[in-house]
Length: 251
Image (cartoon, rainbow, N blue to C red; front, side):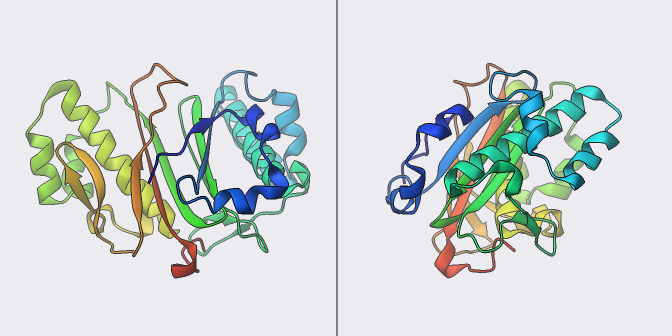
């Protein structure tokens, strides 16, 4: 399957919104991806983003102690609402989110599957009418010591692949492996309720290319290149699965 193209949120307004279901059924591009910045007004102004938020989102924004984190949250929610609204031909502020038993948001009565991930000042959003989606993005933290986590999140085989490398390459593999796993955990809607060690990667050389566990028919795993949007070292992976075979996967 061809990797989805990354779009900026402003580009959403030029997409054929009313024809979206037909476009989404294109076998080569069943998923749309949007990448946006959270630290400036290049994709959405703080005032516009805030105007879209519901009461609960406004209250959560006020709870942030750090102003930078508060503004990132507001822009992230605002961009998500605008992107979804354009796909559904609705107003951003009128969208009402429901939540699955493990906290995954969805839009009741809509076939649109969506998932968002953010790290530092960058965010990505995946959406599709024909497939369930899970996406994860992580900026590489040079000061982060992950050695003590390896036995808790990776299988023995995965740890062996990590041990074959060192330095920056080992760090890159750690983040690639983790984002691929978390994208699957988000796809299922279970999040961290699905232990990372129960998600086992299929590896092609030093890159994740699929899963040996859990087995979900028709699942795809794709590496997403975010370099056009950020010069920072980061990892981003997208997992998709056919919705007609996994009707409850988004809940």
